[in-house]
Length: 251
Image (cartoon, rainbow, N blue to C red; front, side, top):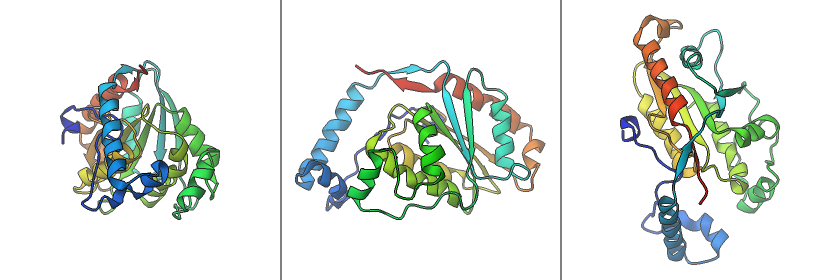
């Protein structure tokens, strides 16, 4: 709700501590310290990053667009094309995640995942390593084209997000922005946005620019064109992209 009101969030803008602190067990392997001290270090790191958080607007951003939709039947892709035609000085790289091309994460042990991550690799290889990892590293922002499937992200895009973990072990994404276009048959677009924020902003450290998501409602293909408000909103969203993508200034 804050983001839709215009608030911007730096990557990983919060520290979550469960009662047992067991959610810090992964970081404990990195710091080799007590869970309480690991939690305190995370809080200290958050405060330092917040105090030093300064950004500059990107003039010619590289935008990576990820989708798993059918060009001939997708209202969500159609809405993206409305946005795309209004973008200025944005370098766009589009990758279609076809069925069966991305294996989902199998939860390798931490040391195994870290070993492959140091080489910008993943144990399972494929399109993730060959195309998506290099594209993510080159991008200033990533746009997720998300039709709403039962208030959840599509399986192919979910697999992509899960498989980013190996790359994340070596490379943090604080300088990169996330965006999303979400089209629902009835409602629930906010549920998709929450998933993207949780997985990519709170977890994987991507920045969340103001008004990072464009929502629409459409059922049969072509419905997206029937409501003129979608054209207006697409123009506004393009302006948001043109004006609000930013990069952290290192102090």
